[in-house]
Image (tube, rainbow, N blue to C red):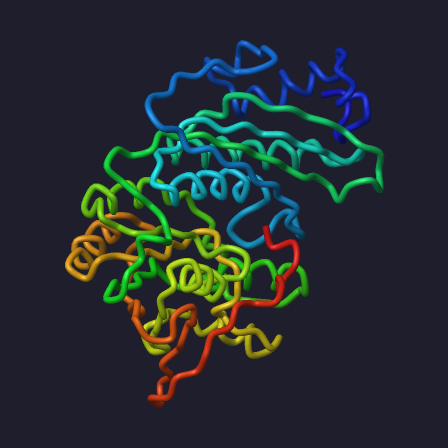
Length: 335
């Protein structure tokens, strides 16, 4: 390209915009649906459809194990997967600040294509706008996604009943630790990276093994604590989890100790919490462990008839403390 940075002309709709599309966007995203370059995409769906949207303003844009583009695709894929759907199509809208390096944009869109391919979704339509320098923070991305609901599934917090098991797919807090380390120049071992990943193939296997799964949720902003509290209130049940069963990498716990955070409240971008009838729990765990993203899956607690609307944590020394709903996002711009 003539420029190595994005200019206002790249968002003006003329020849320079066309150059950006042909040399950066289409080489990464190109597919038969998108390549028509019409005002919208015509896609094939069947039966009941799941539909979601989200916006991504993470800072820094690049962090250990990922970037804003990886978050955008995986976040939307996972939102659809948690409704019991098979993600099919995604839209991508990008608001780019004047002066943003073309090389960085190419890295982001290439990552998005890689994640879309892994998830098996098609980037079907999109939009690019450029704003003046100082009017944005590098790049913001909005995505929307649609998917086919898996027949026979019924995902709802209202389905949660006492006696159900609470299953967590793996270690928590890695994403937030990676973001905080990047933001505050904290040196962490290379093993601590964002957990950002598309979970749709794992959740599909879970639902095929046990269509009676009551709820699937990805514990993003507010972490596991927020998810459990939301479901406890909606279901009018109590939830009791065991501290010793919650997997936390020592390095992540160290960051939390340094900055004064509780890992239960940290955002994750590649984890799943499932509420499962007790008789289906082992089938679900077996299905999860067939996925690279469910190797560390385990039961962390159960639903109770006592203390409805409340989440309790059984500590390592045998006491029980209340896990409150977080008041706000303790790490802003985490996704």
